[in-house]
Image (cartoon, rainbow over the protein chains, first blue to last red):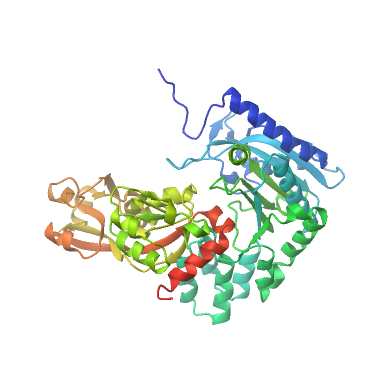
Length: 324
Length: 213
């Protein structure tokens, strides 16, 4: 008799659990060395509270009712609960606040897409630190933590959630069309993006400016290739690269810039991050700057963070060991 | 161009197979072994894996292939796959249509009399989205092959299917009622490969954009 598990959930047996704990230990050691303190928040929160941070509660998919009839959700990310915690518990604590968590989050899955309903995140949140210094610190700490975990080929991709909306506004694209173009960029449906931009009848220069971010990606030389309004928009990314280089030149070589990078969460206001390793076909994690989120819970703070999917980092780590 | 750049490309067998290989020839990829082998599926020397068109997004999403070629119809049906769509390759043109038995009003009649129209299709997501989006109730019946027989023997009122020339529809006494979408072959990429192998993929895109070059 086999007792089923919900799709997208799994048991972890002793060998894997031991390795995951060792991996967690190495990440944790770097986080703590750099002054980050661990927090734990409940897996269940009130839905209306999480919705203050994001109208989809970060994609929360599983709900239940408590004995009072209030709607509880299983958290879908660690950032909104951290922003709530800071407003509740650190209302007048000195800044910046450096926090990390190891926590499971829960999301809906597509059938047959090998996604996880329950996944373990190792997340960092840096609150009360502005761009670009805060962004650079998060990038450097995450890269060092992954190197310490034994990864050798990992990369971090940086983009900026504010770039494309700015370009759309400056190009005189009608308000009604902007969301469509942004959605094409986020999905990287380049034929659709090109067709819809062509339809607007813009000047050749404007048209090229709206298409460029979709393919502008690579090392810091990409930032040099950004021209016009794009050159201003990438200034923050350039500064992040300088700051990480000053702190740790070897790790700075792991940075790639992707001017079309967009993340799903609506709360990102500036820099966005994604972490990659050639051994894994998916991003190992991601994050970004969310300067408006903490204010929604009552303590306005510039902030940024990044969460790693621990099981995916483990996959990359195993591949490194296999390669020897 | 593919294997020597460290790339793997997922190539669809079936209707897009030959033209895909012709395009790869134009890139300087030696596809002779692929053309000569019906049963062998993996050709590591030239960086090619062959599969059904509907499996291409799956392999590319998981990173088992860095890039791939498949029809827009497949991408529409599997809209949840996280793959990047880089290029409309222009070949393999066909259309997704609603077809029914020749008659006065094949969709209106069932809608008036039972409030619902029954549709057989191999593309349940496209069919569902289309009928929902046009404000009509539809019962979508998923079948795996020869969808044309469904209205002929009374399984459904109509079908949603792909047609290139319309010959199969005509031979089965079906007529096109509405067009849902047009489809051509697309070059897609794994999101991580698109960043970590940016230069290599951009070279393939540039060469495929101008096949004569």
